Image (cartoon, rainbow, N blue to C red; front, side, top):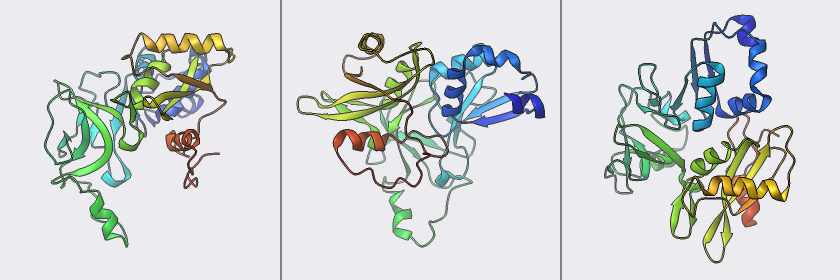
Length: 284
């Protein structure tokens, strides 16, 4: 806020983690600074929770425009344009010059509402042309016939808006259902005591996996069994019967990359008793 005020910033490109941290600091802090110079806000790096979008409209008095891209795509490929109606929780629509679709493993486009792989038709303007010294790795991105496979799971609604569900390797398989962590995490941060959350699948003999949530509380809240039950019931009435967290662990912080992305695989490895793998990107 102070940098925007001091340097009269007009366009702010940030990450959901940074916005959630600002929410955690409290709404009254915003009133101490002049943000009138700010005419446009964008977010990328992770999906933007609906609650954060609504907070931006109510507290910052700005629409936060979520968009999607990857290092491999070279530039934003899906976005909420200024001229569009923002649907909180959606990454928007494909930008001009990009064909984006939800496809199955055979490359067939799926109808609205059907979950599948988020894919791009090769040939968009900023598309990567190779990976230095690793042709085999480059070809792996195009294992779905006719498409660049992003590794993300998503669906498209009747209006053409694309909704992120989770990385393919983050999807939780519980009680015969497939569940993306984003839906559960978005419901969790709607609770007034929750600042941040990360959801993973924990191995379970009966259900295959159960939903486990790691939660950072807002200032003024203390971990307790009563709060754990309250959060569980809060989510239970908002999501499908299989989607609420059956375990909640309160933590001081979540493992993140230096760019603010939550490293769910670290939490998942902890729950499954597996090696966490490369931690060179871990923030702390």
